[in-house]
View (cartoon, rainbow, N blue to C red):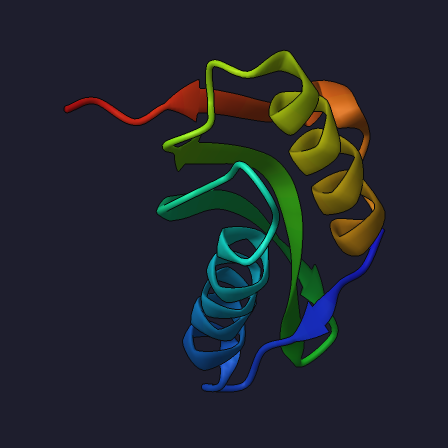
Length: 94
């Protein structure tokens, strides 16, 4: 699992990961507008905390399309280094 070092920059790092995912995923065919929520776990690593992604919710326009869903799940799992069953894709409401 990919972890990050805290020390004041943890919020910026976590927010940056979400922004990057939203930006890249929205460029994927069939996805449309996208929002990403990541649940982070914190473990003490000596003087600093280490944050690791534990679960992801993706809400997007193409969330009802099974091909889009599978593409998003496999891509995000590979990017974050987490298992696919920790990722949910939901359709965006009107």
